Length: 507
Ligand code: KIV
Ligand code: ZN
Image (cartoon, rainbow, N blue to C red; front, top):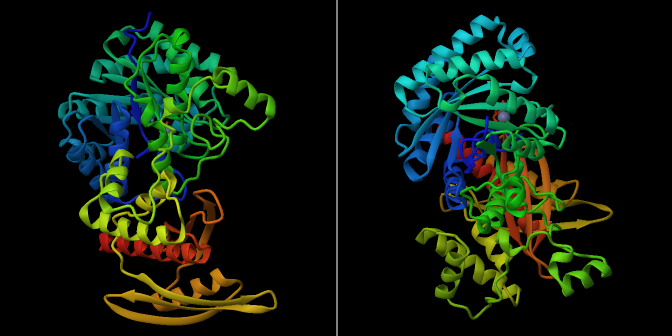
């Protein structure tokens, strides 16, 4: 069967499958910011979360539905309560979608669901009917489709479409499929499901064998017209199909694919950086399209070729994905107006309080660093998240050496009062963290620590990302400064504030 039309629908699941990345724990304002980035990027549908999974997810789906103009999907099992909650959360959207799923592979049915094929079929149809009674736009997914019997899939999909599914999604849940095999599965569905013309075929590929983008593109060649992706490919295990990889493949090989999409590719780089910052998941320097090295040319031969004609070694330009640095450099004498103008041009829209906070940090940095570039501004604006500041750093002193225990004394502000503690540790950062934990009280063990220079030069800004464990959950914290110890302390305090905010929401 020939594909229905030449426009690919992109359902972005950064906020649902992407948020399932281990250690990622976004708060509401971060989810809203990602949703805004996705809308600006031009995705057709934002899958905003799994409302029945937690009150936080429910709130996020509701808030995203109320704040973006594109379609919003709520993810639900084929279970009455999930679907009702999904609808309560997503019904505020201008274009709501309910996305219901159940597994169809032998191994999932037997061991996970402990259900027969007939029971799975019935549960799927009941779920779709209920969803359809609430919402016109219903997507149905056969979890682990690539390891399901094609004949069973044809049967389930035909019944699903009859029950009201308008999109049928074929996930390669465990990233097991090979591109030609997955393409053939999609081609088989297009050919053997009699009522398939009434629905859009969608695919959802995981990257366990590094084939998510290849499988997605192969499916498009065989009739899929919706693809499910995440920014930077974040997601369970090895992640999901990266939106930037498939979109830039379709763009760069436009004649080969002859297919259109709604993505503004010049917004890719910004979305990628924001998602990385907000989730705390770093981007590999080798990552296609958005990695730091994706447009870097080291060898003399390559540099010479690129200077003669960029197309010798560049199949796409950095500008086409929005990787540009403004030549306008801000410094010590730049005023608030120029600062706000530059941030707006970079795509930030901060509240008055956030601007005050960011501007103060800008002035602070400008005292230490002559030229402030876009990367510095990104680091400053990106670290101004809407987190209640239960504790803030007032000052610290550290003593350390190669033949002594490090000693730190830290003063934190809490409800306008100063609290001071001193502690020793295995190094200056450990000592400072011990002092902070004494002030706050309770257990705040550090689970991971990463440091990165976000800008270049001797006076570069360093960014520290930490994850701490508290109340059985990982909480991320970020801090930036030209001083690594200062950045480390800010990151730890930020993580504690986030954990406390989460606990307050739970209460
Ligand atoms: O990977 C998967 O199968 C999913 C759903 C679409 C069921 O995330
Ligand atoms: Zn998935």
